[in-house]
Length: 578
Image (cartoon, rainbow, N blue to C red; front, side, top):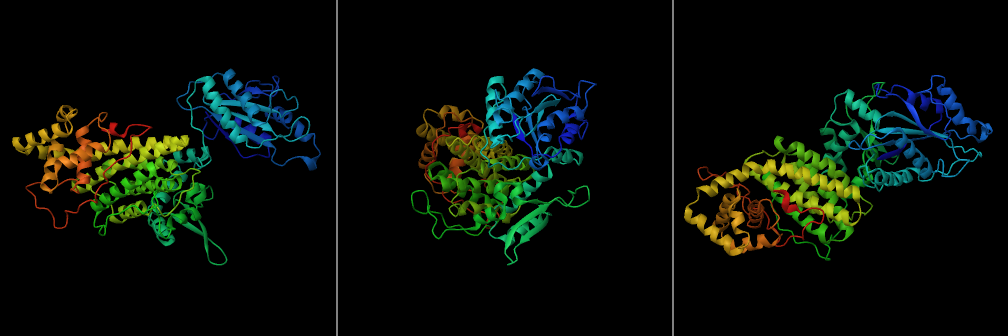
């Protein structure tokens, strides 16, 4: 159940005309009272002898009784209460009781207060009501309405329990502003998938991903086709910005601009600029800088994805084991990785990755202050992804994309666990939802490279396949039979053979891969082991076919993967993803 306290109004009659009227899209059906301060209050919706003016005069009576100099200009209080889409349709009596609980909780009409404000609850749809009240009490004093929005949400959580409704998560004030009903209706009229505010938020986030300066940020906004207005101080310093979609216009034909802070709290220019601030010597959670392997310049999408996979792994460790400020910075930077990945993804994974980035945005903000600078490897990886350009959905590009999505899934789960432990319910739910989209994207991205690896494994000689089966029995005796029965067993055989040919000891790496996270609950143990081995052995995600000649310079290897993984997820078990 979602309550919303609207901006105060000046005209009671104007709001009544809207509540009892047809609505902007004829969506209001059978408007009528379900409750009021007085059981005999006139209902112009059901009583043909009553008018809007009759109800307005009674509601305004305490206001008009005051001397004109003491009447508050904005005396009309307005609260809407909406049920979740999956909730059952409530009766008028139930909505009436909910209205009484809301005016009691918010301070409009405390229980047992005979001098409280006058109010009325109007229902014009199955799933919500509107409560209108005048804030002057019967005794001439103004109602004490401090934190009325917070109180309405607290009461909504109790109502959900009492009525068996969907339990929504408690907010902490860090969420981006929701689109208004007018914005949603406008998007529907214009055939937009999302409102202008949401489109702009997504575009600005993509522009932020991996940026290193103000100029680069604005260059990306311009390249994305947005209209930009900059707010400049008399000294010449840049104070802020506003953006608009070229085709989003108001009734006068002018572009509708939104400031960064109106898109999301962390998209104001000062908050974005914090990402470009690096400490002199950022340290890891144990006081030392995490060792980062030397990497050459990015030469293409595949290498950018390998580099991002390594950075994502380091971030996962820090989120699990670092201090709160550093972990919060890495979770925010993880959002930039997802934004960059969505922006550069191939068509067949783009929709799921875009949704993953869109919902993870909520997980990237909390009241825990991010300590910037320690996330520079992750932000650089996001920058590399953007600079390397779009990736193909096949070959090494497609395989490294699957590898990165696989690691991003673990990172989303780690973020969900981190938020859940700190009782950040909305953020934990958002990270978990992002993980589900990443799961779907992985399954799409991994289909072709895993099929290729399986084919390579099936072409190996019986002697080689037998050798790998014996190795598996030696390292994982309890799981060997199950692994050999999986569709991914042939891909694991090919990978173990690649590990040997690359000069590694397959037994050592397989033992290490099996220790990184328990395997009993994995849907496909073989597939999990394939990616772990290919990362730790620095192998190409998808080697060239034997009958093809590799392009010079394509055998770039990934940085070494750490030897250990964090403990299992408390929110969900990541190994169940495949």
